[in-house]
Length: 247
Ligand code: ADP
Ligand code: MG
Ligand code: MG
Image (cartoon, rainbow, N blue to C red; front, top):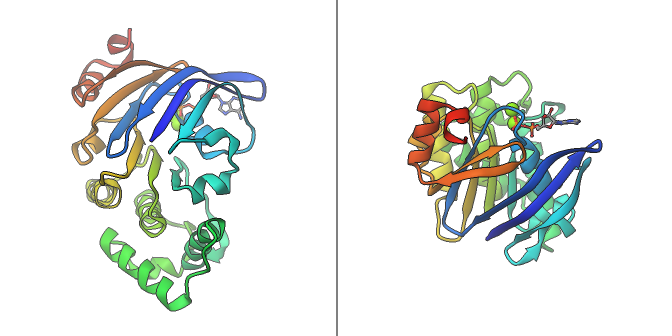
C-alpha cells in the first residue's frame, strides 16, 4: 500500500530524512518510535505534502501511484489522513463546519457532490458518540480551548468522518489520560483495522500499543529506519531506551 524507498528530505536546506525506506501493506499497523528530533514528524509532513519540505531523493508510492507527484489535497482525496502532533486551533470556524468542509473538499477532489447538512450532522454526531465526545464540542470553534485529550478525540472523529485508507498518526497519545488513551486506541482500531486499510503510528511510548497492537515496530534515528521488529521491539525500547536497542 505504501512503499518508501531511500527518501531524502530537507527543510531550509537542512537534510532531515537521510535515506529512509519503509513498506506498509494493506491490513497492517506499523509503529514508528525514535528519539526526539529523529525526523518522525518530518516523515509525516513529507508524506502529507506539507509545503516547505523538499524531497531531494527517493520515491514514495501509495496504492501504486507516485505520492510525491500529488498535491496535498489529491493525497487526501486518494485516502491519506494525517493526524498532527499539535492540532491547529481555528477561532472563527465551528468544529462541525470545519469537519464538513474537510469532507466536502475530499469529495470534490474525487468528483463527488457535497453532502447535505442533515446527512453530515447525522454522521458527525454518530462519530462523536462512538468516540465518547460531547456533542456540544461539535459546535465550538475548532480545537479552541480543547484539552489535549479532547483535541485527540476530535481528530479521531475527523478520521471517522473522512474514512481514510491510510492514516499517519503523529503522537496521538501525547498528553492523554487513561480514558482518552483507551478511547483513541479503540477509535483507531474501529476506523482503521480492516484488510484494505493501514496505519503508521508515530509514538514515543509503548502504552498506546497496548490498545493498538502493531504488526511491525521501527526505530527511526537520525533520518533513517535503523531497526525493525515485531511488537516486542516496542517493549525492549521502553525498558532499555533507544541508545541501547538501536545501537
Ligand atoms: P521528531 O518528530 O522525530 O521529534 P522532527 O521531524 O520534528 O523530529 O524534527 C527533525 C529535525 O528537524 C530536528 O532536528 C528539528 O530541529 C529539525 N527541524 C524541524 N523543523 C525545522 C525547520 N523548520 N527548520 C529547520 N530545522 C527543522
Ligand atoms: Mg518530537
Ligand atoms: Mg515529532
